[in-house]
Image 1 (cartoon, rainbow, N blue to C red):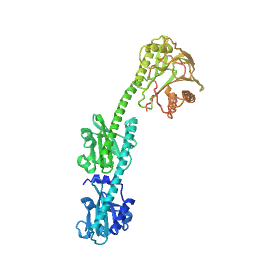
Image 2 (tube, helix red, strand yellow):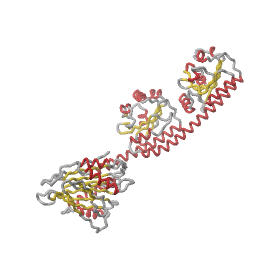
Image 3 (cartoon, helix red, strand yellow):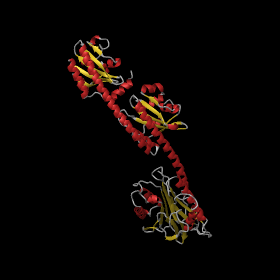
Image 4 (cartoon, rainbow, N blue to C red):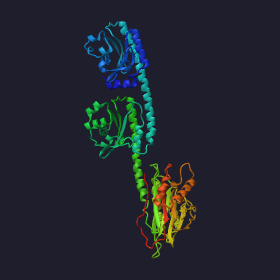
Amino acid sequence: MDELGRLEALRLAGLTAAADPGMDRFARMVARSLHVPVSLVSILESDRQVFPGMVGLEEPWASQRQTPLSHSFCQHVVASGEPLILNDSRLYRLTCASLAIPDLRVIAYAGMPLTDADGHVLGSLCAIGHEPREWTEDELRDLADLAAACSVELRLRIATEQIRRDRDHAAVLLRASVELGRSRELTDLLRRLRRLFDGPAEPSYVGLLLADERGLFRVADPDDLRPVEADIDRLERDAGFPSAQAMREQRTVFVPDRAALADGFCPEAVAGYDSLGLSSVLCVPLGRGRGVLMWCWAEAHVLTVTEEAVLTAVAGYASQAVERTLFVENRLSAAEQLQSAMLTALPVVPGLEMAALYLPAADQDMVGGDWYDAYLVPDGSAGRQAALMVSIGDIIGHDMRAAAVMGQVRSMLRQATLGDRKHSPAAALAAVDSTFAVLPLGPGGTAVHARLDPCGDRWRLTWSNAGHTPPLLRLPGGRVSALQEHDLLLLGTPAGSPRRDHTRELPPGSVLLLYTDGLVEHRDSDIDDGIAQAVSMLSAHGDRPLPELLDALSRGLEDFPRPDDVAVLALRVTGPPDDAPTREPGHDYSARP
């Protein structure tokens, strides 16, 4: 007998130890037609019989609508698949010891099987007498007809529920195609997989294991971490687990119940599933040997053809999401390494304090072309302190190309600066323009290039702006102004268009803030409002240590989605320059979530 299939049909029928109007109606028709004191629609579960339809039972059975199997004649109908007709149950070896005789006063019994469309016997429709009785042929024929009608009702309910589940499965596929396509990392993918399903027959646990050279490692959901997941976080390829078998043989492995698990797999596997409260598992290998997706159920489970097709299709979506996620992570890692290599370690300069901040875009697919730079250049005069060159820029785009062009621009700007005896920022930017005019490097970018020279008790700032957001200057006392002077975009200047240098004296206590547009440009807001907010933050926090200033600026971004990366370079004039320059590394406060 296909017990799992029978129990699955019972779940679909939705009948249990509670009154059901339709089943009660059949019980009443039996009582009236056969003139019996008790009639039951009895459904046999794995450890009890329940009565969704009932007439005439005494208490406490009437309220409970169930009995243990020790009181069940229905179990014999289910086992044989045939009617059970007893004139006096006390005279038959099969039933004479049943507790149904003293407790329920089941003496005369006539039970007809109730079946689903696949022939599973779900229970019985029975007539019960408290005295011995000879059942007539007409009575048994009427009971058989009523049992057939009741079976039709059960089949309609099962079919309706199956249609509903099929509809739900179609909705799962649609939801999976959307949800899994949005996943950005492996833990997010696992969370989305676990939220795909609902309902009593749907998976109670979803596990994702990925392959590496050592075997399989488990992707843990930090929001739903189970102890066994930490204890068994890795499996060898030859491990006696269903998931390892699915990986080795590259085929779907289904374990219907705990008995099959204990029979076919190692004790460690059985203990692991027991600790999770699971009895059944479907393991589907992911494409290209990427790993295995596990669907698990707490109870023994019947896997229908439709359900297997749906879960396999979802595993296909998951496989694509895993491949895409790993590709993006690898690509992002390479791009971030390239970009990180371009973020200069800041020199220590007597008379100046410096700090830098870099924040990558919130979207892991967006790798930007933002950069900052700071380095010392000699002025050619013996005994004089070297000048400091500082730059900040943004190459248009958010991809590997932007990061690569950023590196080229940064290097060429350094070369152009060092090749110019006067170290003019405007001349260096113009030289980059001329070089890039013959190279196909895309739509260009923006930059501020500046030089700070020691000048008595203060520093002189000379800068040129190639279409970049204006630097902010905070003077002692807290007044902040934007250095608005600028020329055309970097790499976008027509031949012959001049670039200009601008100068400003910086007394001790001045703070210069260079930044990229990710700091001030937010979706659904004007960039001028963002600059005004940065001015306010610099005015309020500019007298604090520079790391604290940068921290305040980064906290100000938390309320906004960040589609772009952010680079910030802050400098404070701390006093007159000393005589001896140094090139020791300074402070870089780059932040990566």
